[in-house]
Length: 360
Ligand SMILES: *[C@@H]1O[C@H](CO)[C@@H](O)[C@H](O)[C@H]1NC(C)=O
Ligand SMILES: *[C@@H]1O[C@H](CO)[C@@H](O)[C@H](O)[C@H]1NC(C)=O
Ligand SMILES: *[C@@H]1O[C@H](CO)[C@@H](O)[C@H](O)[C@H]1NC(C)=O
Ligand SMILES: *[C@@H]1O[C@H](CO)[C@@H](O)[C@H](O)[C@H]1NC(C)=O
Ligand SMILES: *[C@@H]1O[C@H](CO)[C@@H](O)[C@H](O)[C@H]1NC(C)=O
Image 1 (tube, rainbow, N blue to C red):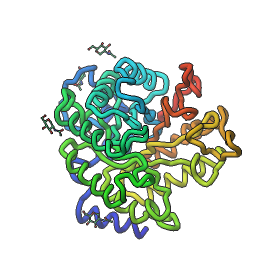
Image 2 (image 1 turned 180 degrees about the vertical axis):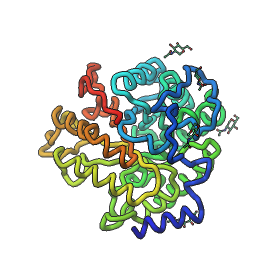
Image 3 (image 1 turned 90 degrees about the vertical axis):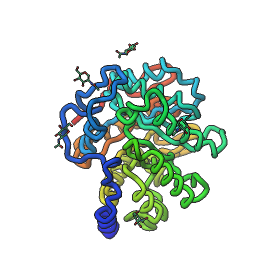
Image 4 (image 1 turned 45 degrees about the vertical axis):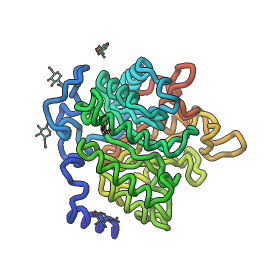
């Protein structure tokens, strides 16, 4: 409560999350809005005849299943347009996805962002951009090249004018606090602040993709409220892209996972006065080498399997009304490239066949 009161005073005084360029409208329920309703680009780069904020559906409408994390961990050329385009078509047609979240983009030129925008236009899907600190062995400092390529795409590419209508939001880092990206929390906060300043003319909401269940930093020592770093990050954010990860917390079984997710959503809503999305959450359909978790019971075993995977995601779908009530949307992690978290298996089949999450 204390934190909430402080946050609302700060917002009343500074209007920090109500600036017109970053404000995510609350309360508009336009039946034509993008990307959940009938608004369409008509497969054209012609800029919609309205403001960015009138084009996008409101934060209230951004609940339930949004789409997939879309890993781009290979080199840029590994993701030709034809592949991105057919993946977007499958995500939309087979699962009802409205957004795609770029995950760990390991490429440093405008091309990947232009291809994602192009596929978003073609399939009327929004995209989430990500400035990533490389985890593929490339030098850490190359996050700046990713930042440069995103800013250049927004400023100079042939998609520059339409980009704010396709790019839903930008994640500045994925678990940057957990990984101490930038070298220190203070340095990272400075980089985030600079990026926001450089991108603010585009009106695209910016936040970090991070787990807030980090006592002592993101949350308070006893976990009940915001922690010192969390408070600063919330202050610098337009939107929360939360990692809600029972798979990695407290050695939980899959059967315990929903309770954890529900409590985290309630915590996020109580402690942060910003639109909230779950950008990353996962369970595995078999032991996940390199991403061990899910109540590990031995060197290569866990409470993982097809039943657990299906049940994990079915819980999200069964609780669509809970997400609607809390105005929280979620992404399924991941489409491909993440081992046994993947919905689309290497043989092309789906880990959960014939399943389309509800829109309640
Ligand atoms: C969009 O237009 C391109 C040509 O500009 C065409 O190749 C493609 O099939 C169209 N996509 C859809 C979904 O109609
Ligand atoms: C797409 O076409 C429809 C019907 O002509 C039109 O109402 C709509 O404004 C077009 N979309 C854009 C983004 O221009
Ligand atoms: C919602 O947005 C639409 C489209 O721009 C606009 O016509 C309408 O007046 C808005 N409604 C509210 C309640 O703000
Ligand atoms: C846009 O291109 C110009 C000319 O190449 C360059 O100087 C500028 O830095 C670019 N802007 C961004 C934001 O990358
Ligand atoms: C949040 O931002 C406001 C306005 O810039 C500032 O006055 C305040 O001290 C900040 N709070 C924290 C915890 O950083």
